[in-house]
Amino acid sequence: MFYMHMNAIIAMIGMIAVLMLTRKWADNKRILMIIFSLCFLLLFSQKLLVFYAAFTVINYAGFVYLCRTTVWRKATFIFAIAANVIGVFLGVRLFVMGIFHNPLFDTIIYLGLIYNVLKVIDAYYFAYFFGKEGQVPAIDYANYLLFIPTFTSGPILKFRDFMADSKKPYTVNAALFEDSVKRIILGLFKKIVVVTWMTSIFDQVLKQDLHTHQSLFLLIWFYILIYMDFSGYSDMAIGFGRLMGYTMPENFKRPLFSPSMTQFWRNWHATLGDFFRDHIFMFFSRTVPTRWVASGLSVLIMVLIGLWHGFTWLYFFYGLYHGLILAIENLLKITTVNKKKVSKSYFYFRCFVTQALVTFSVIIYSSNYETVLRIYKGLLHFTG
Image 1 (tube, rainbow, N blue to C red):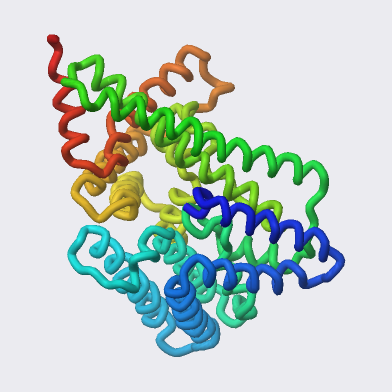
Image 2 (tube, rainbow, N blue to C red):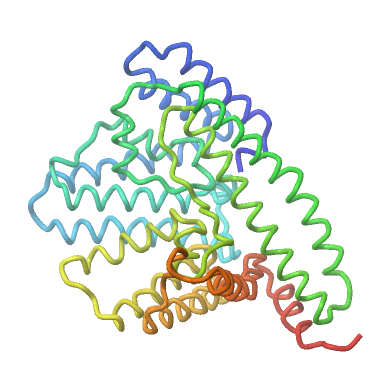
């Protein structure tokens, strides 16, 4: 959401210029980035800075303790994750739902705290499995949590990858610079021009009495709109992140050409799907789960992904819907399709079926019960 503020974009461009001018300084990336992040948050909101300073210090203390302790490691690990999930995830979601209000959260809830909780959890996993070898300097841990390009909207950075990048000197060659600038421009165009125009069309059609053809149009249109919105943010984050010297994972990998729902979730918001798969299946890594167990885990993961987007029944059923489809694919052994081993017509037919299933459910992202029900009811209104 920082990308909708011109001052924020100018500040990031200025930081990139400073990094380039000081590239001969071995630690310029590590030291200048933390200064930039703290100053950025301070200027954006003093309350936001205070909150994240405390959030970072507390979790770094927990991270170091988990790295070093040999007593009650699993209990400490579970407690640290539970404390973050219950104390932050549910707290912020309940605030969004209007259950309670606290002035401290008025600028925080809109700034991707849930993304940062997932990063904290990933760091705790690293500490738990690597122990003393996994401990990192406080400055690198803080840079990981407060990394501005991905602060509000992802992609979700892996702790191990970010720490590896922190050890490398700042280098941005001409080819990377050109590609990153193009990604930023593309992201801005998607978000500011395309999404704004498409939202206007969507709202105009939604005001009409909905019939089958109009509801179908809105489902397809909203799917494209959401794709442009999400991928636009990712393009900007990836572009700015790479210009600041860090490797950014791709978040959208041609999801429209996914021949199964399983492959769709490896291509759509890929870092989120990867996070939940890695951190749940990790506990089953010593044994190969049966197809029934894997199917059950798929349902669990998708329900969690649904609730991650919003703590409502709409998102619960959204996750359950996708989870059941993934489970069926797993049980029927149709989770993947090798394009080279099947005919083009079969491959694209599978892509069409997958996109139809996704299109039917993606309207849930509107987070509006009335809108969702109106569009679904309109599908059954054949006359008019």
